[in-house]
Amino acid sequence: MKEKNKFKFKSLKELEKKIEELDLDIPIIQNLDFLKEEIKLGSRIIPNRLAVHPMEGTDANMDGSPGELTLRRYRRFAAGGAGLIWLEAVAASEDGRANEKQLLITESNLDSFRKLAVMMREEAKNKFGAEHNPYLAVQLNHSGRYGVNNHILFHHELSDKSAGVSPDQEVMTDAELEQVEDNFLRASKLVKEAGFDAVDIKACHRYLFSEALAAHKRKGIYGGSYENRTRLLKNTIKKVKANVEIDIVVRLNVYDDIAYPYGWGTDESGNMDLSEPKRLIRELEDLGVKIINITASTPYLKPYINRPYDNSSGLGMETDEPPIVGVERLIKLTKFVSETVDKCLVIGTGFSWLRKYAAYAAAGVVEKSWADMIGFGRLALAYPDFAQAIIENNCLDKKKVCVSCSKCAYLKAYNKASGCVVRDSKIYVPFLKEINN
View 1 (cartoon, rainbow, N blue to C red):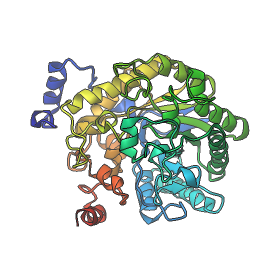
View 2: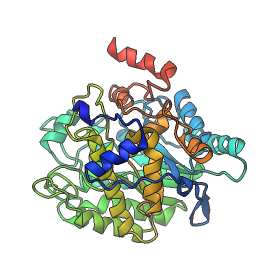
View 3: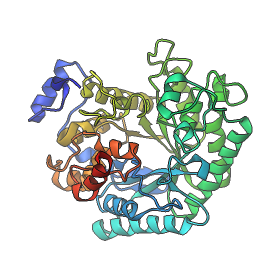
View 4: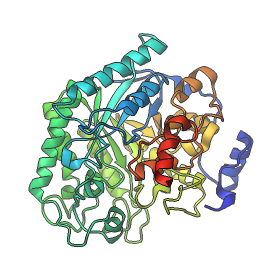
């Protein structure tokens, strides 16, 4: 990262000047009332337009139940005032787990997830009153090539290398993928039993369902044509919708930034081509998906696309692209999705790099109807009560915001409990020292 591209804005005017200088479409307004508004979703009232993104903590118990630090994190999120809390990636089956510290929902540990949902609602009610009932979504995932068994749908040199997949690794069979659909159905029933509002069929960051969208070179009913490549996601949604009375939401890669025929939403040169994503987004809405949460690319190849940062923290993924350009890209993708759907709620992403000024861009995006809600991930780890600060103080405290140092991602990459080493140092610096020692 070139030094001149790093965050150095000492005032909102300096940020606005840089936006104008680079001719970027990042709306900035100081009226944060747009973020404080309630929003209706079916019979549910979401208390405000602010959401906590799914951020893995790598701190589950061996059986997949929430660990001590997991509970601490979600207690703090619930007490932080966000209208929507999107639970991090929860494996739908043991073989889809990323590592032994990832959450996994099963019949035997269901009660722990039930207690987690109750705890979050009670924490929010005790802090903000009975009227404040956060909408709770659980992200179900199969980690695919980035999981314990390196399950792949096809070979791709760059992706294989990033995941440590050998050239002779066998691809998953169609029968195995059909079983994945049924595993997600079973897990969705458990999410419903645990008392959550929604289940996310995760299709982003090149995990299994996301990789399926790019399976141009795969043979069989889950590869090749558009219909085949979207089959895994749409079949799973249909099965859940037909059998479980729960809202279905999707965190979706709008594009991969990987060239065709190994990428989604790109052409042969790797340029953005959103014709297929647009078609899928419309179909997801027709299938009854309630919320689409925007993201792009993969943290294993181009993390600066999905989380613009100043520092990759030694993960070897530096870029000369100014992070603010990455912020604008995600805003444009959010706008694209909002203009594609009619009823589905859209959650925007990519604001954390803006630090204390993030709320002003978030409000600008909501005011323009480019998003219905705004999600924060890294900033939520650093500043779990960010929503309360926006709602009550009309600003974010510069001493509490994320500084985009990527240390949380660094901890996760080494399967250590992941959190903010800057703002929550007493808890997470010891894990950082374990790596460095």
